[in-house]
Image 1 (cartoon, one colour):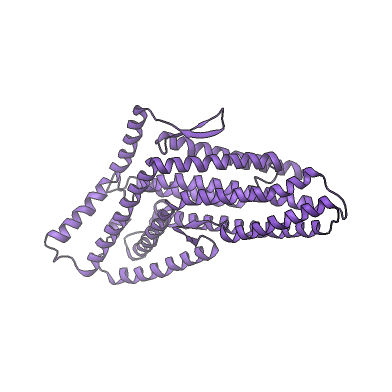
Image 2 (cartoon, rainbow, N blue to C red):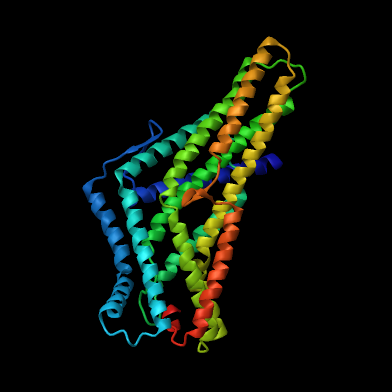
Length: 424
């Protein structure tokens, strides 16, 4: 019964990775992001020259999404022109701060959208991305061929959090295009940059699931080796090769992680922009819900659950998911260090000539492994390699949100001309 449940979980996990990979790949092909295609015969991703008809359609879709956001852009541009070039005596300090805050959000959204579009169509980045994907595919096949796939698909909690994050993101996007009593469509925040970033984020998360599976496969093999190892019993040459193969595979995994992290860091700043939106939008919405007496309790709950919940939570869940995956990488890396040390101790007791040579080889490779682990740690990075996204960063981010929200709430309480009707 337990074996059947394990097989079912493994199949569901494998199906989840396969389905999401196909979805991300299909979305990239549909919007012509990266201009690459998967070649079934070779099992590799290669550059692809997209037909001009498909390019025109992809550009039209992006322009359509951008056009839906245009009214809000024009409104911000008009307020900027009125503030700098017309009579601004009607603006008090609080109103000026509100509009400058809105313009700052609009500027960051516009820059992030332009940057994501540029990266998606930059030939150098696309070649770099193609190289990273091929390295990941080769490593996954290698691990499955040598160690099997029994340990590759076993992390249900990350899947649950990821599905929650996807739901909240779709909730945020759908809320922007939901008709209201005053407006048919009122897009207050950019969605094109959110959609583009979700493609990068989902691809990186799928890579993390594979990376954790590789680490668990190496750990499972070492556990099996230690459990079957008998004192003073000579091992076969094949077993010796598989032990030494663990070190070379881990070295390749570290290089792949360095490569993929470099590609991820070019777009990871979008998470900080989303958190910046959340800090102000959540505070302003909560203030308006409690200060606007015209709204009933049911209407306030409806606004909070149907319109604002996704905008509040999806960046925080995204950072939380990155931190959870990074902590798992750190834990599995520590477990690998412990198992490798035990393997070194076990082989050090052997006294045959071949075993002594293997023991010295394992000892040397263990030293190399420790140096490599310190120089290239298996972590999730954000913004740069000095910012590790772990539980400490997640906690700091929540503290930042609380402090920023409290400060902004004090400003809103002192403001008597809030735009609550427009926000809600």
